[in-house]
Structures are given as structure tokens and as C-alpha cells.
Amino acid sequence: MSVDGDDGKIIEGPDSPSSVGWVSAKKMCLYGDTANPLVLEAGGSIGPVEVEYETYGELSQDKDNVIVICHALTGDAHAAGWDREPFGPLREYRKKKPGWWNSMIGPGKPIDTNRFYALCVNVLGSCYGSSGPSSINPETGRPYGLSFPIVTVGDWAKIQFAVLDRLGIGKVLAVIGGSMGGQIALELALSEPERVGSLAILSAGPRLTTQGLAFNAVGRNAIISDSNFSGGDYYGKDRPIKGLAVARMMAQITYLSEESMGVKFGRRLRGKDAPDYSLTGIEFEMESYLNYQAASFVERYDPNSYLYMTRAMDYYDAALIWGGGDLIEAMRRIKARTLVVSFSSDWLFPPELLRELVSALCRARHPLSYVNIPSRYGHDAFLVETDAVGRLIRSFLKDPKVG
View 1 (cartoon, helix red, strand yellow):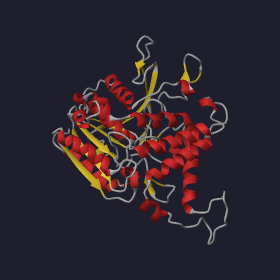
View 2 (cartoon, one colour):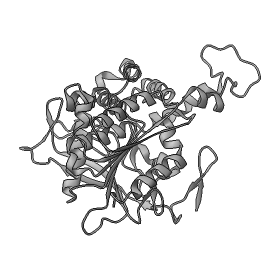
View 3 (tube, helix red, strand yellow):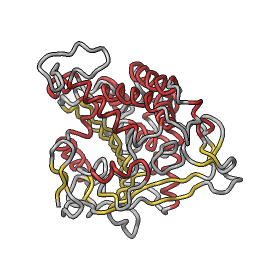
View 4 (cartoon, one colour):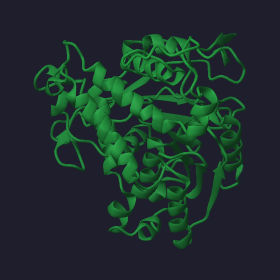
């Protein structure tokens, strides 16, 4: 079976031989003992912690075929296949589309589920199944809101290892992540080097650029300035969706490139031959696209989670955390074979930032491969350039040191 996507393209159906088929999310409760909560990097603690995750393929008898997939900013644990029982804010969205990296995960695909056991964990602070600001605080019986503690990339790595521990999995074959997921993947390899055999980082660096910090700040400010924000205590009331919509529009621009926007939209007017000379109406195709993306996003995402996720990305600085400000010293910790992939038109995590990471790894005498893929798709290229990325991941995982 095939399914027509929103853009008219044919999407692989759940009964395709190369699909993982119908999948269901799994839940795990961690740090449930009130005497042993999760102690957080920024201070404070939380417990119990509910974690949502999905797995694909069969875990080998020796539990030695595990690949951890780390999701991006507004992603979730549903990386491949079709959700058997979609619910909550993702219900309608997941009816239309398979997992966010479906092109990479499945029988015969680059992350071959005939060979590997893939695991994707939803991060703490999200609104997609793991504990976050929209979750119920057991002490009050009401959503946490902004009383939810500040989380960091380091906390996310700690949660992922806790999930692996509960599953009885020690060392993993590989950790793979793009964008925010690339930060998590890097942190996994830094925080417990002996447990990560191979590391693939796509469109991510050891920190955000100053410009990246600025875009995140504008997005958060749009949400906080919305009259419905109510100090983050808007649950059961009108949500600050106008602010979230602006934040999404801003972010969407950083995911693209001038070339991709020019090819797809240019300066074309929306459904007319001449402008209306309106200050408030939609005149251009580009405006219509941003409005569509924003309207779709606000239906499925919690504004508070957006604040927590972007702030965690802001705080991450691998050099500062692990090397006292020296990136080379930090990279000496890594023991995993490493693949770093940048994209020529990415200006959220630009190639020069990733080359800084590559240079530090080389100067730390670390074995690695680096590829800069020519692409007009901007930051989104790690999701869009499926053929090029797929060849690299397939080759990387074919190495005799993996599996």
C-alpha cells in the first residue's frame, strides 16, 4: 500500500517490504523512588520520570546490535513505521505520515532492521510522551508548567543511558543524531565513552552559533509575549498559539536556505497576478508556506516545551562542559569511530562550525570521516537528502568494526 503525502509524493505504506510496518510506542517509568530522583545538571531534581520510546528490529541474544537514534528539536520517539494507535496532539499528524526518519530505518534500509535493533527515546521536557511541562505534577495534581525544572542535553543523555540500563543493554554499536539529536549523540559519546562504539553526527556542532542563540531567543520571546501565555500556566485555557506560530515561522526560515526558498517560492504571488497592496493579508507564496507550517505545528506542540527544548540547545557547549573551554581536550574523551556530516547551505549549523569539531577530533588524534554534502536544502538537508545521507550511513554501518 502507498499513501499520498501532502506534497503529492507517494509515501511508503505500512505493508511495504522495506517498512517496519505498524509500531506502538512503549513507556518506561524511571526514578520512581522518591528517595532517588533524577538529579539535574542545572539544579533541582525530578521523579518519577516517564519516558516514551520506540524500537525497531530484533534485539540480538547478546544485546550487541543496538543503534540509538536521537531526534531533533520538535521530533519524537516515532522515527519509523506507522503509529498503530496515534493519540493526543499527534493523532491527526501521524495518520498522514510515517516516522520522521522512515527513509533510513527498516528492512534493507541504511539502518537495516534485519540486522540492527534501533532505539529512539523521546527527550525529557518534550510534549510527546516523556515527562515535560504539560505533564501532571504528582505533588499538585496539575500540569507542571514553568515549575518543571530546567533540563539540559546532559540530562537527556543520562535518561537515554537509564533506558538502556533498564533494557539490560551495555555498549551500543552506534549513536546517530541530526541537529539537536546530533548534540545528544555527541554528549552520549562524551559522557560515557566506553558505551558508544560508533558516532554519527549530522548537521550539528559542539554548540550553537551566536546567530542560532539569537533565533532561539526571538522564538521564546514571541511565546512569552503572547497575551495567553499566563506565566506558562495556560493549560485548560486558550494557549499562546500566536506566539508559538511566530516562533515556528522563525525557526522554519533557519531550516531552509535562500536557494531552496528561491527555487520553491521565489517572489511569486499567492494565487494572483498583481498584489493587493495589503499590510495584513498574505501576498506571497513564501508567506503562505510559513503560515501553513505554523498552523500545522501549533496543533501538535506545547509552547512551554518549545521554551525548554530551545534553552537546552542554547546551554550546550561541549568544549566548556568537558574540556574547560578547550574543544580538543573535550574530544580526547571520545572513543567511538566518528562520522561528521555537514551540508553546504546549512546556516543553523554551518559547515565551518562542523569543521571546527572535525579539526578538534583530528588534533585529538581521533579516527573519523567527514563529508560536506553540496545541497540547496539548508539545515533540513539531513532529512531531505535521503540518498546521500543513506549512502553514508549504510557505508558507515557496514564497517567491520560495527556489528
